[in-house]
Length: 361
Image (tube, rainbow, N blue to C red):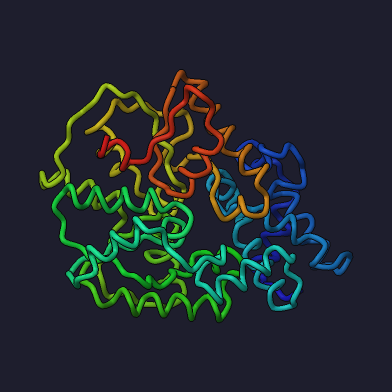
């Protein structure tokens, strides 16, 4: 297997330690050693030594959520996310991707999303038509919101409408490349998709990115790919916080008590933790989970639920358990994808809110 010397070093070093066991959301959900970063390193070390074929470990490689909890916790500085992503790229180059991943990759290349969707719901179509005029500000919804969580996309639009913001929505929104980057890493196809999206974004002064996964991709990964975005790119959470400070978004605080689920893309990758808390605190009573901010735990997503639904359901249930263990009865999330996972796993009597729910209720 062709892999960078840096990844080989991390693989050979990472496999001797158990430091990440307690923090890996997938390993905790399955309860299996094979699901941990250490086991992934062990498997890939066997591939590098030609003891087994790359195809034999790819199911395991795709168990990695790339959430970076292991990287954050590792005091020795090893990076299991880096070598998992390199293994995915190499599997794509060698035509050794699992069939279910191949299908999603083909969907990304054909439809622009891993789900093979090409039609929007009527309510979102109506919202897009109402905001089709060109303005200085673009609201970038992302493929999860547009094709899998239409109601949440419409809520995001409604919040900006409530604040009196003039903004544009695109009927044919270019995919950010986040899904393809997750599936096959730094491939030429990924870079081409990112470049096409950047070109579309550069027609605006400000781009407000709704989905934290897209925000991480556009604000952080594009730079790694050498792709320039001339527009000012802000997360949806940061934009809402600015609207509150400017008194454009009027807050009326309720007695609803919640804890906040930090999306790892915001907290760890973009180091944005307080903006969402400012918004939540203006509309509800906010408490904290034990694992918060940069120490947050991944709560599931829509993409991985396509090929490991039971595991992602358990991931979400465990995060809800974390909240219930401190007496919480409601979680607020700023991630449309985590919202979907948590909502699907929530029990009766436990509420899952989006930021938009708090603002619009």
